[in-house]
Image 1 (cartoon, rainbow, N blue to C red):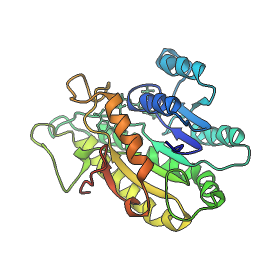
Image 2: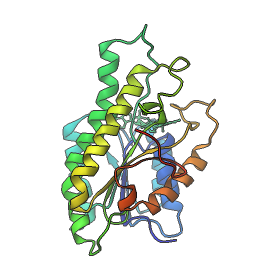
Image 3: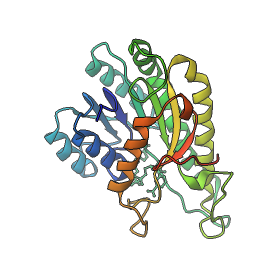
Image 4: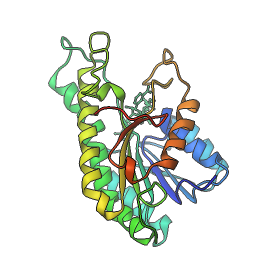
Length: 255
Ligand code: NDP
């Protein structure tokens, strides 16, 4: 199996989907040279599992990155740049996100804005600040076409953010979460259109309903299974799937 990418950065990698992504990337037969595992606080108890993983894999670099804090993002860009020693960043996975169960009755402006800050503003700001490193990777790749091994931004989205499907609103209204993922999807589409000609692939991916703190124990799928699928899908993304909304099995979803 070929290396997915020489360098990969994952946001929100101290637990759930992000932690499993980093774990599987590090355990792959041909792991990336650099796995930038970022999280809000890697030093406290919240980052313990990630610290233990990094201790076993020297290619995992723990980096502080709060996706809603611009100085923190810029600090992370500088640290990543130092590790890359003149090379670009190939793959940025915007995974960090927050859930919200607010209904029409309970929702308020504060909850909407807090959810949008992390799920929409965060991935956009992170993409914007890491863009020079992604552009560098795209330019230096020496290949045409789009792929995660050249340069890519993957935004972890959710099927419940699909306006086309508008799934189960009565059972799970989740106004802030759904609206934020729909907005994040638009950000992904715009980035895909704007960055395609620069050699950077952008796509949104739905991991399925997964057992994590956010997905809860009720979820039907393990995080291991979902990440196996996602890594396979990432490996086959190309021009044809640039700007697509896919699930963990590679099926196209309506926006
Ligand atoms: P978890 O709640 O288990 O983990 C969320 C992660 O995001 C944590 O690492 C958390 O860090 C991090 N995070 C939250 N806010 C910030 C921030 N401001 N800066 C940096 N990191 C932050 O969720 P999942 O692992 O389940 O979800 C990951 C992604 O997958 C999300 O985007 C989610 O919307 C999406 N998703 C999940 C599904 C599921 O069934 N689980 C289904 C569909 C989509 P901290 O520990 O510091 O809070």
